Length: 121
Length: 402
Image 1 (cartoon, rainbow over the protein chains, first blue to last red):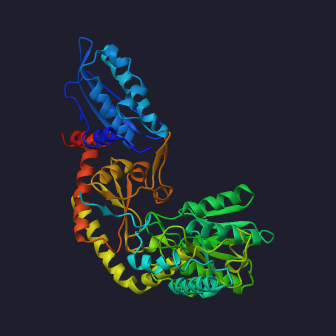
Image 2 (image 1 turned 60 degrees about the vertical axis):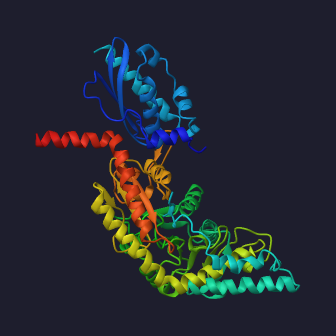
Image 3 (image 1 turned 180 degrees about the vertical axis):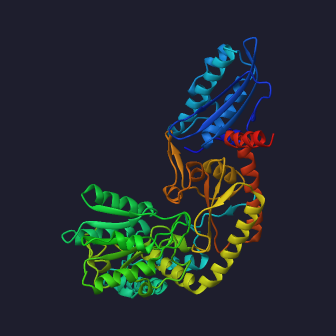
């Protein structure tokens, strides 16, 4: 399955790329098998994700999932963000090939670790 | 948007002169080369002429060329055919760690059926050593299969030296040892002469030299024992049954002739573009590594690892800018398959994942090189801005200086 235009747009113009200087939660998760990495830095205040930045290394779906996740969760409450699923991430990119679903899994996992850290801040 | 094709090791466009040569055999000269009537004779004459043209490209005799459906079939036929015929005399194969998947896969199949295999290493230059070949030979070795030039990094292997070694073995009475080389990437790009190379079998593919896909050839030196792998007809001297693809074969012949005539011109051209490309990249982009020996490699190919980023992302970024290249690594179902070729050079996983192959062709020009350098610099910078690997290096560097 070819990548969608939305997918390519995220690759060409990543949303919220980089690191937050004033983050209060940073999480970096690695897919132990393929080595893909996603780093999220969040500024969470009053139970809401006020700002988010991401960095990613790996195959294009990992980069695009990081970008779409960073775009989606900005402004969400942490409860809303925790309800996000792999499928929603993949759908927001116009779908992912079956063999690339692990990229959405990495995004969700990193998000949960980051929000967990913010809650314990 | 400008489109630049730098993937000539994957395939090439068909040369208009080749199209012109094959066209009549799709329409009015449509005969089956096995038919007795005039149309058949016409097709037979065309196939025989093409056979001479292909034989000339590698210095072989006309009756030593067998047409196949492509390089993959030629490799399969060579390996399976020789091993099946020789199985009673020995079941040991010597090959390299950087062979094309069609060689690697066929040898793995034999291994599953009880054959023993010695896989020769390459060193950081991507080249097999003659001493390793010599040391690997056993009394029961029946086949050596080492490629002429590698498809990912273009390094040229010591085929002539291995050929001399095999000849020496034969002079000492070892008559069961055969030597195959996959010359799919090398043919038409460097001069090949099977007499000088001393190989017994040599695989060729048409679509790498500006002919259509779906046709290739295997050179089989007279006297080599080979079991056919496809039966059911008398074609190709009983070694490869099936109606000859006359238009494709005619095209292959014409392309082989053009490649031979224009080889020096094409090489000088791609070499100049390739070297300028590499100089500019090394100058303009940090943290790049050129893979494979600098001298001993095909003149049209460049394989470069870009640190901190991954090849497929770079490939798609370039594709979005109209530039076609390829990468040897794949990430699939969360399992990484880094290029075995780059790994065999001793490169770490990050460098193997960040390797891209640029392969130039006769129709590329200086404007293409300029455009790709710009596109590449943008793509690399954009991906590196996203990379947590680079931000780590940066913070550790600033930590040291601070």
